[in-house]
Image (cartoon, rainbow, N blue to C red):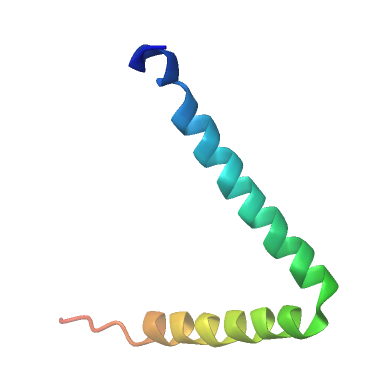
Length: 61
């Protein structure tokens, strides 16, 4: 085998690993309500920070 044989392998492998990681996280969230609750609370906290940052944009006249 030459290096030419493996040119197309890396992208497919990385996509598979990313999909597997995402699927595993979603399965774990469904299985564990505490993790789902924690994920939601983190989302709420970061969403508030984004809203505050938007409302405090400094504009010079």
